[in-house]
Length: 145
Image 1 (cartoon, rainbow, N blue to C red):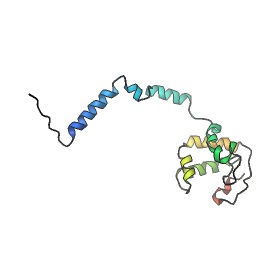
Image 2: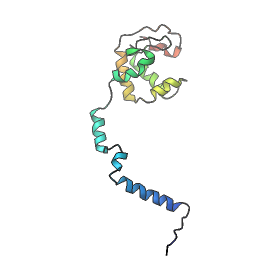
Image 3: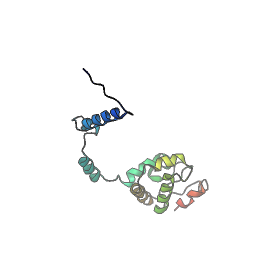
Image 4: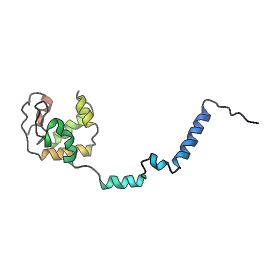
């Protein structure tokens, strides 16, 4: 004789789901789900390779702002020689979406404060480039050396 289980407000489904999750996390397959890496191994790798260099991070900017921040498109200000504090301020402002620039918000939002500072350190060391269109966007005027 089979007994019937009464499901009240979905509690049985939630209980079965929780039991299934606990079993899955303790199975050998769970390492494949987590990338096969323990938390300790993940921490070890993160500490061994903490942050890409400013030059590596700055390469993300080259498509629009030119190689090493040197202008090649008059619509985009050169980053080479830009003052460190100004670069950091602009990137954080774009990241917070305070300017109406969809592209720059999407670019800046992925960078941490440490990464933004690394890029600023890189660009300030590059040979300054005079922007050929400095009046195009008055908010960027401070970027000139």
